[in-house]
Image (cartoon, each protein chain N blue to C red):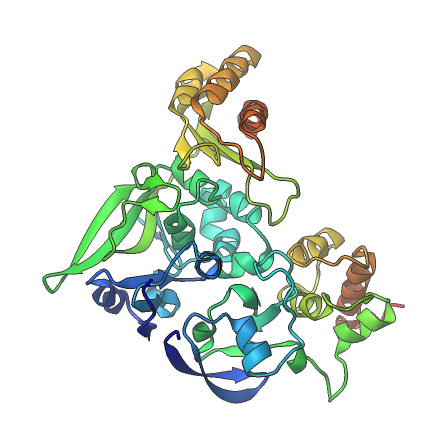
Length: 162
Length: 290
């Protein structure tokens, strides 16, 4: 057994305390210890982005992050993305534009998209594509994902489009 | 196999150095390399697992007289967005832009990329061009012990460096180049994002009227360590960079690298890439002032 460490952090707005092995990754903690299975395990080595979460608002591959490093931080997962109890703007645009097929990559894409929209509300199409470079999707061909992100960006600027 | 017996997240450099003093710590920052190496069994843990990410004083880019210092905890995203680096050494920002993906750039640190000592470590190449030095701290006989090692002498082999087990890499520093300094970085992979470089090339120097002086060349993923290309440098030093010079340089470059066959490419292909990319980058660098 690996050494166990107690950590406390804010998880989707709620103060959380948990004891975990010091060598555990954050994704395993979220899914297997805290039962938040919205964050997905794809490749487990930082190539696919399905495990993307926000750590102090910064998009991070949770499969590559030591869970002990969550101590004292603000962690947001797909379960914490919502607006007045329903889907938030980016999620609604994913539905609206048909940017979801099998859905496995979607939580990671929404988390990365959320960070991108916050950092730059005026992205060009190239900037959107570059922003999504760490997220693999094997179904949609990305076109609708890019459209949904652009549309959410336009709507959040109050330019209601489509 | 050793097991983790304790975890520590110090908040100062001094505290970190003291914790590492007996040489029994496994140190991580972003964790992006260590996590994978631990999962695959390539790396085993020392009794103390030490997280450096709370040492805020180790993060950031500062200017001190003629030098720039990049703290070891500075992330690749920080480098990409840093106005001082963008202004004085854009090759570092350009390289950061080609590094992995947004999510990994947010976690991966300069110190980690150097200490991981991958022959393909992207950020190492521009730092080699800048003649950077790594700054190491240890805590011996109740006092701080600093030493500087030129980055080009820091690597011993894949994953191996001259950093002692009781030392922390606190930062990297280099002299701000003159206004005539030009530099470029190019990497080759099967896709632009996330691929580990099949090969990478960096070229720099002082450009004046088509002539390159103080020429510096570095190659990644074609030797056991990220290497300076001394023979290629000699072939272009003080020369007008015309097609004849470029042809000579490309042959020298292909001759002085020692690539291996692996899953990413064959040695033969890597040598061809080095030849092609050295030429392409030389042309690009000498026209970057146009």
